[in-house]
Length: 320
Image (cartoon, rainbow, N blue to C red):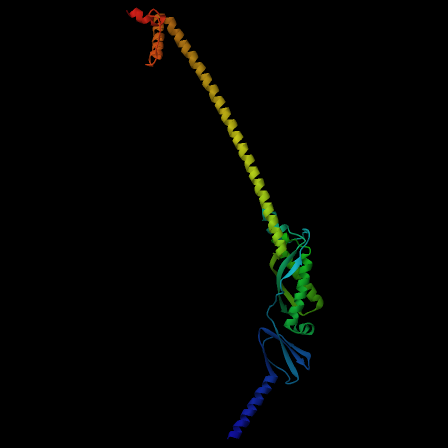
């Protein structure tokens, strides 16, 4: 009984081993190449259960998903001048929507011909597993090769791109150019892959350039502040001068109007006095004397040294 069980288990084990050598499963996220004595004899792109000749044929699996390559940050020299480039309609609309101050105010965007720290990454997929196996072999080799291609394409494109363009909406156009360059090199080398996307993650100034740029920005800001203060003082002086001029004009006009009114009043008073004098000379003389008494004697500190027969007291004399 024990011997029969052992034989049964042995048969099952042999059957499982044979099945593992004959059958293999391809996941929906994978694609496979069947190798016979190291030579490719079949390509499997669909998921499911498949067969192979045991011990003679082998299976190599490749990922069907989008893969990532992320080179280390590197120094890249940007263009020494703003060469410009042709933009599509969408990017032209983006740039036209910016205010001129937003395009040109940032001093950091005027840095040209200097090395910057650039960090990029790419996404790719294996489109031809057989060709990928022949040219690259595995993912590690593919990533290493793509890093070199991506770095070369990035340096070539940024060699004609200024920092201002790299920090503006034109950055999208720069990344598309890099993508075209990388795909062109990949197609030329027939690597069996396709670059899906290229992105510039970070574009920073080097420490020395950052220091000099900050100093220049501070100097420009101080110069702008001085200019703004000077314009403010000039404007304040202009406003003060205008206000003083308007004040002088208003005072002169008021004084003129007051003199005119005073003259008219005096003229009217003289006319009234003259009419009163012509109507009753004695009464006019009496009124004028009363006014003189009021003005002269209203102050208790006033002292007059006059003769009793003075003309000034003629009405008092008449009353006696």
